[in-house]
Amino acid sequence: MSNKVWKHVLITGAAGGIGAEICQQLLTSSEKMTLVGRSESALLQLKQRLLQQKPQQTIDIVTCDLVNAQQRVELASQVTNVDLLINNAGTLALDFLSEQTGQQVQHQIELNLLAPIDLTRLLLNQLGQQPSASIVNIGSALGFIGMPAHSVYCASKAGLQSFSESLRRELSDSNISVLHIAPRATDTQLNDQRMRHLNQQTGSKTDSARWVAEQVVAAINKQTAETVLGWPEKLFARINKIAPSVVDNALAKKLPTVRQCLDTSTQAPV
Image 1 (cartoon, rainbow, N blue to C red):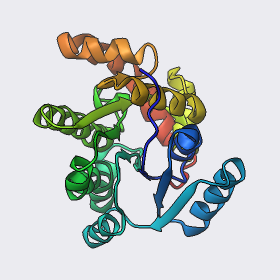
Image 2 (cartoon, rainbow, N blue to C red):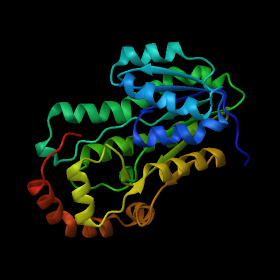
Image 3 (cartoon, rainbow, N blue to C red):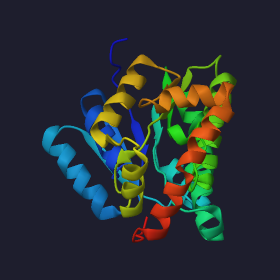
Image 4 (cartoon, one colour):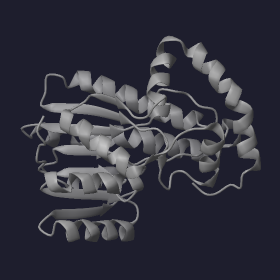
C-alpha cells in the first residue's frame, strides 16, 4: 500500500521517546500535526526540530493533562479535520500491587485506558467526516502477557487491546480503520532505573524508540489491524491465548528474580 498523505495527525504523548520518533517518521507524509503533551517546553523543542526538517509543515502544540476529562473535551474542540489519531500517551508504575497506592492504580487506568477511549469518542464525528481515517492505539505486548509487578499496567493495556478490537468491528462498515500496535520494552523515559535493571536480570530485550516508531508507521501504511512487536514476545502472546499454563510456569521461575530486583534496586521516579 502506498503511503497516504495525512491531512491532520493528532498524537498524544508526542514529546516522549516513541511519540517524538513517530512524529519524525510521519513528517513527510502529513500536512499538519497537532502535538499533545503535558510539557509545553518539550513540545516546543520537538516542534522546532520538526520545522528544521520541514519548514513548511503546519504544527500546533496543545498542552493537556489527558486524565482530566474537561481538558480532553477542550482538546477535541480545538482541532478540526483530524484523519489520523494516535493514542500514544501512557504511564507505568512498576511494583507489586500490594506496594502501589490507589493514586498510582487510578492514574495508570485513566491515562492508559480511559483517556484514549474518551478522546476517540470525542473525535469520532470529525474522523468520520474524512474520506478515510485511522485510529492508532499504542498498547503493549504486556496487554497480551500478564507479568508480575505489572498487574495494573497489564490490565490497562489489555483493556486497550480489547477496546481496539471491538471498535474495529463496530466501525467495519465505515471509513475509519482501527489499528492496535503492541511494542515490548522500549528504551524511553518510561523505563526507569529499576525497570532497566529488571529487564537485564530477566533477559528481556529492549527496542529503540526509533525502531518501534518505524514499525508503527509501517503498520499504519499497511493498515495492519493488530501488531505485536518483538520476539519471543509475539510467540508468548500466542501461547498465552491457547496454553496460559505454559506461560504461568515460565514466569513463575522468574518471580524470585523480579522480587530481588524490586527489593534491592534503587527506586527512581517513573
